[in-house]
Length: 157
Image (cartoon, rainbow, N blue to C red; front, side):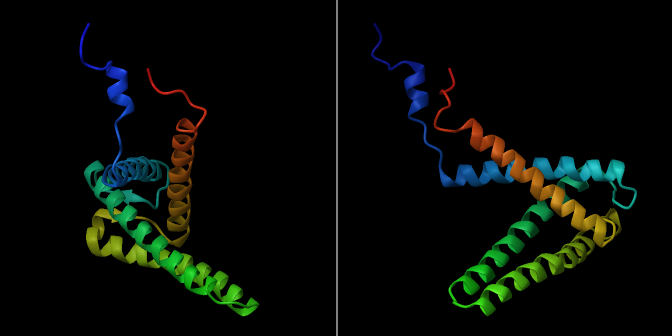
């Protein structure tokens, strides 16, 4: 008989660090964003990316931009949430819509500054649609991941 615990006991003691979670989140999002971008390149004539490599870099940039925009939107929303009254609730909704609308122009400009003629995300309609598809895809993958890790799930063999 061996003094070593069974291999599955070692696996059950593994912990995941916050750095590992951030890395996994970024990798998943960048891979999903790369797929979505390349599907847009294939099916939307207004979206042009010169190469697959540039599409990966574009996905990384979009991930950073969307994270920053969502962080900013949440901070503004939290600021309004600390105030009472219907006017502040209305201003919170209005500011959220304004941030989400204006952010598309920021995305277009930053992508143009970084990649120039190598990336064309189309006009406002294509960018809005692209951002919505990116966010929905990300949420779909998060939903699947959460369901796979639900409390009722059995550990891997």
